[in-house]
Image (cartoon, rainbow, N blue to C red; front, side, top):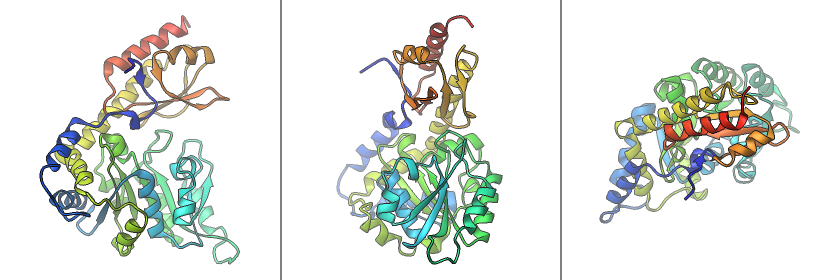
Length: 346
């Protein structure tokens, strides 16, 4: 193992100890398959507590599976999904929404990875009723975004209002919904269902789980056929208790929220520490657990000896530093000190 700070992704973090303990306990004895077990029932109860008693949640294997199966439940083959050009469903899912869900993605430019009301209003009108064009049906938002920015509840409500007025549904890719909830200091329902979100892909893998996600239907009627979509889409786990046990463990005592708050705090610590380092320029607001910055190539090369991180745009020198529940304050401080040393006097 290397002593370099890990900033490539929150996916690189280990599983939280409470998750490992929960899996060990769930491994004792036999249990019903395909969700017919006490852990799955407890996980589903937790989701209902968070999103409302008539909401429905279905556990799935991974984030791409959650997004694709959610979009399948929301669309027909001639319909389209309006989303940001930076959205994970557009950039990092290898065409799975198009191939598996069979929908066209209408990607819109967004410098901070957030769609605006005006963009949604214009895209919602494009080609409507014209048989030669795909028909807009869903607006998919990422919360928090690929740039670590966060939609405010008012922004979400405004977009949802426009979408619904044009007969569109609202999907949220919540791979990092915990980080958004921590950043906004709001309950999950307040930043989803209460502001007009119809379906949420709820992620816990980046938040301390080994692999546990869910599709949450805030509009219950959309869930009517989802059990078949989940099975056909290869997202139904036979030993569901091992997915559910992770959810239950992270739900207990709001561990999911504590993990997200820590990850966000480490990003702010890092951003504050490098903000005045000569040559470093932050390129996005630091609202969740990601820091984006540009710097000279020489400084970037020097820092690669101290941490692993992604070069986001080679041409501009922009990098991404992403923190997790496991990021240690001392390691962040050491990285900041290394940046100051490598940059030299201003």
